[in-house]
Image (cartoon, rainbow, N blue to C red; front, side, top):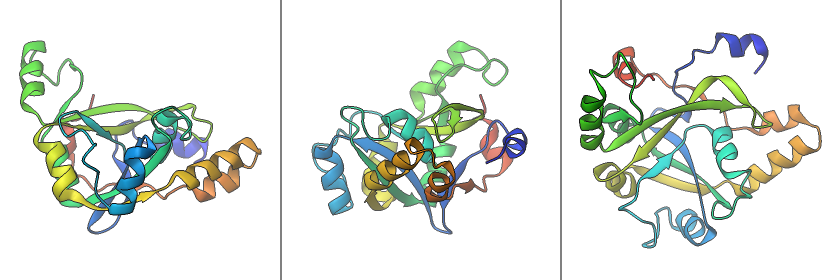
Amino acid sequence: MNDQNERREPEFRVRARHTESTVTVYQAYHPGIGGPAARNGRFPSSWKRDRMTWIKPSFLWMMYRCGWAEKEGQETVLAVEISREGFVWALRNACLSHYARGLHENQAAWKRELRRSPTRVQWDPERDLRLNPLPYRSLQLGLAGEAAERYADEWIVGIEDVTPLAREIHARVRAGEPERAAGMLPEERPYPLDEDGLAQLRA
């Protein structure tokens, strides 16, 4: 994406690889969890349902988080295809992970909403191929309680191990071949979410 396009990109917009029925999100795990998940299309019993799990529609933000699959405990990168219905449910039942003046009545009201909400939204700077921050934000969804259960048991359509892709793109970046690297990235397009659905999620 060139500088002109980066300037036009709104600060808050959901971008993802998506079809008419699914949305792809990314997570990184230890091979003991990531391997079985990719083979079976479901998370193994060792996956902690009682912990918040964060899903990321941005491939490059996932690369930033896991260090191109080189960070300990994040050596297996998964592309998890989930139903659009599940993705929208997560968004519509979400609360911002931090207090935002003008969006919440006060900090106490935000904390009450946070306790009630099974999903948390966090906006972090999107990343370029060298994992430098860009001037617009990338969505993260934290799933807990009912949201985590629905994610594991209802929303998942398929799980793919994309660690080889991550390593190949990283190799092209290190070799000074940014155009080749960019051509290998998953295509992430604006997700058609109505303004009302996004209003309560803007930081």
